[in-house]
Image (cartoon, rainbow, N blue to C red):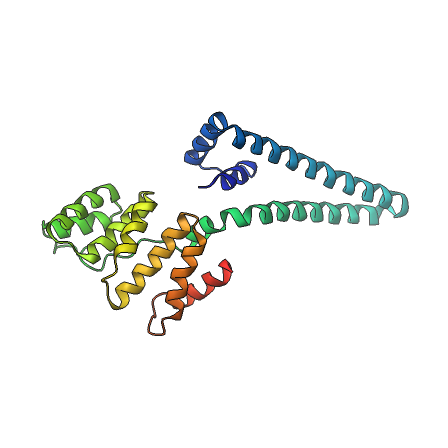
Length: 239
């Protein structure tokens, strides 16, 4: 996560435990980061004070010119406008820096196990079955170890594709990107799926430009049907 996103989420009190630790570490070790945090905190207070002062002035004017009943109605309305307006301000301020992360969270899910689906009563103990069972049951640390063993025996593009999915789940985004980029021998639907997940990896890495490139490849492929409508909607959000 980039520093702008960390600061925005800190101001909105939405940092995860992991990101809070990263934020605190930067606050202690990075002077420029600490200065920016202080500036943004001060700016937030100034905006809040200005909004409050503006509202207070309007309400005083209303109190002097309106009946008690109308004044109360205007008080409620003005309070709602202030709340919505202030919330919108911070949403717009943070949207640009966190949109890629939000879009990743909204659209990413590991590709389903279509190689060795778990079928009760038909399990075997081969490496492939064990690896995909770990993948399907979300035991990603184990799945990564087993996929690496599979790749030692057979350099399969599809196995690499699933390994990259695992790496995304384990927050090893750059490693996943390398695999997706090198997975050039996949054909048909698998090629389209690889492009989609490469786009997801770029989003997670806050690399919107390259994410859009992958999505445009999918959108311009007339033969592609994989997540076709989702690709179109996502490109519109990224424009």
